[in-house]
Image (cartoon, rainbow, N blue to C red):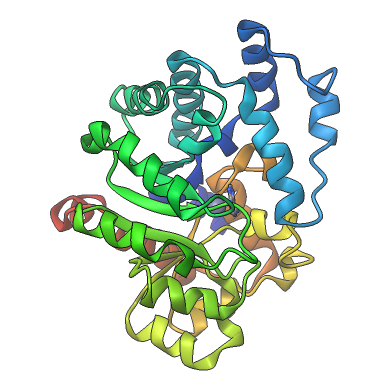
Length: 322
Ligand code: ADE
Ligand code: ZN
């Protein structure tokens, strides 16, 4: 229908995409072959059929296994180039890409190869792209500090710091000191919070880590005072609809609270999270919410604008996109 066509053609900014989550099964098999890595699945179809998740951890186990085929700088480049081409097809004009260096350095991959490969693909793409280095929250504060130290020679190649992986039991405040150091270094700060974890994790992400955006944050509505604060301060939430249904944060798209988040005056953005695992890129996420939820043209325009408003770009560049 007409709304769907308008939504698909709108200019978009993507602010929540894990580059390792853009690795399609076909590319996993091609890289496994190229690098002589053996996989626990005999075919692309077998691998894809394992993508039946019950919660965040069941996804993360498969996501980290998929990333094991990434060994060389060229692998990181090729993965990122494929994502950027796919994003461009969905009219994504600007993207802020998460990467998880610890997933790779733990396997002996040099952080230089991770960062340089991803960065080179961004440089060569017509899509505006920035990088956000994420710490894995199931690992220790010490390991995050060590990773920051290793990444500092490449400080000019990333703009910010994020926090991802297993949320429940690993609250934001575990990383207060390393985030304080990142803030001193002039890095922009974000954190996953309120995906599976409670609203209290959104509060400590704001108060202890001093993040500027909350990744997911959908559980904020359980806390009216927190919701009012997020609206008042216009803290962006990078919401990922297909991720939320695949990981059973909501049973069905019809149950997703995105329309309520917008109605509460929150700065909601739409994003793909791990598109190769969750069944779609940006336009698939937009299609899914506009099919299932009571949203119209005004919401579509608001969601598109919000992505640019919440982007870590100079105002003049945002204005050029808006
Ligand atoms: N890593 C990749 N995707 C993630 C998500 N949705 N939540 C936490 N960690 C992640
Ligand atoms: Zn995420």
